[in-house]
Amino acid sequence: GGQKLSESLVSRIGAVGDGGVASAWAIDLAVVVVVGVVVSLIAEAVVSALSDRTRVAAGRRTPWIIAGGVVSAVMTLALGLCSNVVGIALLWGLVQVGYVMLTVPMAAAFSERVPDKFRPRIVRARGIGQMVGQALGVWIGLYTPFATAAAVFLLAGIVPVLVWPKEPSSEEQPHTAMSAHMLMERFRAPRHAVEFWKAFASRSLVSAGVGLTTMFLWFIASALIFRDWFTQGNSSPIAVPVCSLIASMALATLVGSVGAAFIAGPVGEYIEDPRYLSVISCVLYTVALALPMTMPSAVSMVLFALIGGFAFGLIDTFGQLLAMGALPDARSAGHDLAFFNLSNSVGLALAAIIGAVGVAVTGGFSVLFPAAIVCVLASAVVTISMKR
Image (cartoon, rainbow, N blue to C red; front, side):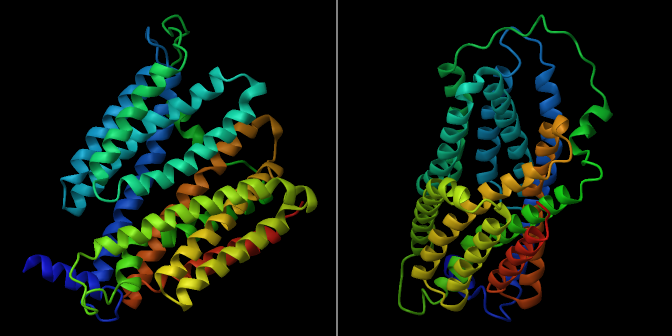
């Protein structure tokens, strides 16, 4: 009886007047996401500073990478056993800490161990690996997500250490004291940089637009696309079509992203101003959003993923070019680009807040598509206002 009630509630989510189920779930998700973003930002600053100052025989990065994989795996398994939103938010924050322990030292190891002449090739391979990994993550983690994620985290912390050349000891490196000022330096924004802030705002807005649909994708699929699953006589759990749709969308997004990676270079050479390319890509993404908004179906969602993956791949490429062109001082380019990357976290938090408020006000998840369109178009407006 409880299972049937749960399935009935899931089938009704998205309908106005559904008893607040949609609003409650959206707000809970927003709380978890925002907590994760805040914890991740703090952890990045702390782990980066501590990793640079680690003096052990195994090296500066190796202990953090191994520990990060273990912490991420353990916290992920614990997360799968928790059903209270407070506990989920806490454990999700701890997962973010482990993830930062794993990825921040790993990124530093890339820059330290890869010669400059091989770096572009490695960066491209890393980007392809991220795209493939995201798609595979959806496919292999649909039915046992927590156990699968824990296993992958554990492997990610062990395999690189075994495969990469052994890191030299850091015991002899000079001791450098830490300070609060040093930790806050990561969050110091460039001064007198109007164009940089425009690029930052544009990236934050487009990240929010993308996050509004990807973050709530499970709810969109169950609430809008398959809302009549049980009334149509289907007896299998709604998770079956939802998982199939999400897996198909992941594959479509991968195909679109790969297409964007191939076309970005030639198009960038033909049209030299990245502002126009970014704006056109934003408009294309809004067209993709309009498909499931006006014709909600599994087919329109897959088309949205395909076109959206292609459009966002272009937005990402040209947005980075705009950010680099807007740097106020070449001498602080590394720091300023690191600060620019915070726009992704800002966009994710914005998506969580806008999505929760929108769902709470309307009582359903269909509002997420027009909200995403507004965010992406706002990003295009900010982009076109930038000076070359």
